[in-house]
Amino acid sequence: MFHFFSKKLFLKDLLEDFVDIHNHILPGIDDGAKTIEDSLLLLKKMKALGIKQFIPTPHIMQGFYPNTDETIGSAYQILLGALTSKLLDDITVNPAAEYMLDSNFESLLENRNLFTLKRDYVLIEMSYFQAPLNLEDTIFKIKTQGYIPVLAHPERYSFYHNNLEYYKKLKQLGCFFQLNLLSLSNHYGKNVEKTANYLIEEQLIDFVGTDIHNEGHIDKLSNLVLNKKIVKSLDEIIENTNRTFSVI
Ligand SMILES: [Fe+2]
Image (cartoon, rainbow, N blue to C red):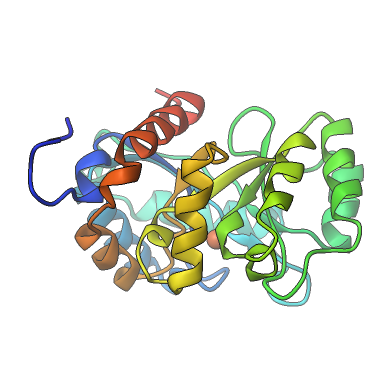
């Protein structure tokens, strides 16, 4: 439970039984864990933070991380094979993916061949330099195919930082938003932090995730002190994330 009267409000106090819907802990298939040893270390440290359910979301990005059912499936099998019963005790690991909005995604979408976070929720991302020209069209197509788009870390797209109203447009189109917990610190820079606070205060965020790639990210999460103004809203977003994605 959260201690509202303690002097410093640590994020980690909100993470008991958290369902993490965005992380890169599968070994050797993207810019996250490189080896199975890395994966085990990340899992162990995240479990110590209170996280109980893991949805690894390797990038599927044409030209960079050409992951498929096979590559994700075999990385998942390697992880399952290496988990000791002690480490596996009271946690769940169910892989999905983080899809870059590119032409490969469009063909997977047409074939309705997407890994979902749970039910119909699909985690998508776009380039940090610019949004795809057909973004609104793509969101429409995702919905038409029966999926629910969840945009990863909307606060990190700096081309929207001076156009905050556009976030509301994306929400109206039926896009859900997943904020990165590290965006609540200056990890990605001051403007990302400011935008993250704005999106929370405007109640535009549906879910949160860690987007953990390495041990350094976990250390920063463990020490992250929350801005008191957003604690109540954040607590509700975490509850909503757990309620929507728990498989227990
Ligand atoms: Fe990610």
